[in-house]
Length: 485
Image: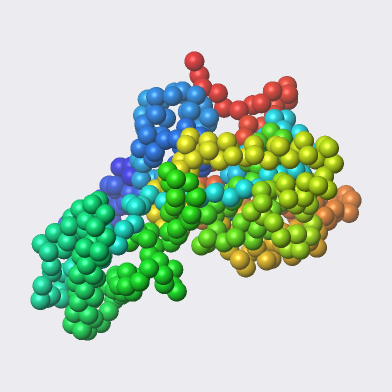
């Protein structure tokens, strides 16, 4: 929002010559957006060093190495951006761009020779739970939350309730907790029954007095009725609601005495057998059987590896993936249930399967997968991407037929909504143009300015690639941007 001087326009009116200034003052166009490399670097640093949005932008201003990684020329003692910009940037990226970032880490590991290309064919697949940032669900707490939300929704819509039960609801909530602590469950269930009666009474009053149910109050009534039904009996046919603000949360049994249950989303992780490089991370809807997630997990790893020219051929799994050989004919599935048919080398190699367990532990403890604070199902997708079923089918058919991925593939995507003003020719590996002496129309087009100096306003694939990795110079050394001393 720069202050502009404006243009001087000379004119003539009844009182003689006049001068008018047009276009002066503050610009309404807004500030230019931040460089793509800076924003992507902040996401990498956030998860690599287990920082929050506020922590990563504050620490960025105090760490010269982070600023060099972000493509800065000089050290600047300031915040990289406002923390809310990262929230908007994550929503702009979506799950497809998060997969693109994971693919770039695989390409970087192969290019830097941190892992042998042949090791990508053997992968270890395992599943875990990504816990959501929700309180432990109890019937008493959920019913008290439903009562408060119903009263607030009625107040917003101007609906006068006969009674809000504010004092009695708070008293019942604490009373149920005391009975549960004393293990007086019959008295506790009597209190919960009264809470359920209050929630049902308030929901019926709102439905009767509301002339038109808008979307907000309709969603509140739907959750309240869902809680009213599920608290009537222990087992219900419909999925239970475990959190008011995160209805996508499911309950999964962990089987340990310390934490018998976990509440979140199921996540599949794929790593290489040698090197422990993460080549896939997927979030799944609901609580599916582990074996039914193997096909989608292998498919994602195949797509992310397509730049390296390799694809998974052998999957080392635990006994939770038994019985899915018919669904995965192209993958050799190995687990200890087939140990009698293994050779001595395969028996020794099978001991490497549990190497994925500490990897999952580090992801949860050190890299922000232990408690997902991002809102809704989109937050789970940004933490560990999940793919649309329609896109999965089209990609699977393309890979089986040996064709290029369709137009929505990872190679043909950009990371921003805007379009670059320069047309960039995209070479097609399968079709080689015949030799010709006359230059083609594509060759006459000017090169992208981002190929030499990445612009923060250019969203094309060339600009993103140029902004991410340093290009080799004529001397053979990387010509990345360096911080001055």
